[in-house]
Amino acid sequence: MASQKYMFYKGIFLNPLSDSQCEFLRDGLLVVKKGKIKDLLPYDKALKKYSSEIHHSNFKDFGHSLVMPGFFDMHFHWVQDDVREMPKDSLLEWLEKYTFPTEQKYANKAYAETKAKGFFKKLSATGTIGGACYSSIHENALHAAMDHVRGEFVIGNVLMNMNSPKELTQTEDESLKLTKKLIKKYGDRHCFTPRFAITTTPKVMRKGSQIADEASCFKQTHLSETPAEIDFVLSLYKKIPGFEKVSSYTEIYQKTGMLGKRSLMGHGIHLSDKELKVLSKTQTSVIHCPTSNAPLKEKGLGSGLFDFKKLEKAKVTWALGSDIGGGPFLSMFDVMRSFVDQNKKKGVSGATFIKALHRSTLAGAEIMGLAKKAGNFKKNKDANFIVVPLKKNLKINNAEDALMKVITQHKLARKNYGTLISHTCYQGDFLFKKK
Image (cartoon, rainbow, N blue to C red):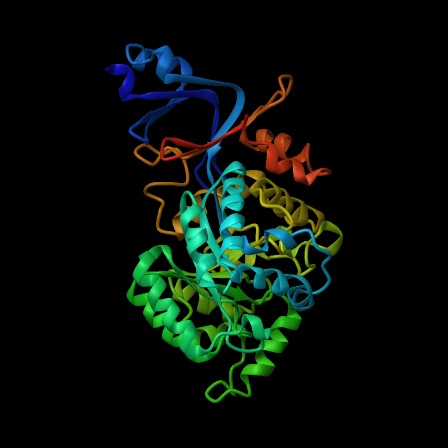
């Protein structure tokens, strides 16, 4: 009976604690009971404590492999998987040329089902076990995503009522009725998702926000990704009754009830001090998407460098996201690399790999209100982890060194990041094992 109580996993452990601290166990043992973490100890100490419990049947040695928490990708569009490597110019032109025509295909139920099945398997294989996801406008695409996703995710169908292609435009009543219907079915797994202020009317954002807030649902949208987007938003809203005097993009979301503790604003690159104060006061989180914002030559949209220090000084919470398809690759390893590289090239200090890991794991769990059960290897949390086999001769000295060596060796072949993981475990069950 003892062998059925516990599972033991041996490896090299990285346990993110904060932006500057990551526990490093060169030879560690993770003790799991009924899908929950009971201990993380150096192997020699664990042997003494659990010697009578360890058996061949409940012990797994991952060898010379890194074991770290599963990722939280806090901003991505599952329906944009097919456009993530398409040629990019400006944000608004890229949406019109590639993204909108692709999303129209998800009106077909069979197409959406097939795509969802493949996509969410791939997501598990890249080690992502939680986060916030955008679907298309279509109800059936949202159902397909909810049916196939595995992990701690909130997902929303984008809402588009104006300035959108005819095939992707809903009436205000359609958007609000569907929001009520989906919240009734999925509760707080549903995320209220106006695409952005350009495509969603104030009425839908205001009334939908009230519905979402009453159901304790998350809300997500895009904010201040590019200067051109900001100019266009303000030019539109200054013509809308009640918004003639708005001075910022953030103020539009404030007036429509979109801000709050469960609100996720994608990008947030070009924000004024006044806007940051509003975001901080309302406890709204910003999701930074470095691979999407990166220069065109790096397959990004060239939106600019995210000033994380400015946000932290203003006490605005933030985490990392892949933003596929604006970001070209699904793996959070690529997102972490991009965050570190872009800041290093600009001479910005403090953008370490430890910080990137924290913002890809625990920070996302905290924003989602899941820090008591996910994000790192603290006792009694869910057993969520990924395994990354290392080259046999690869010597590592500490957590920063381990992440740096794993990530930098693939920076010239970024597709490889999607193949680094051998195992993804969620709540003690393996969602993915490399064959």
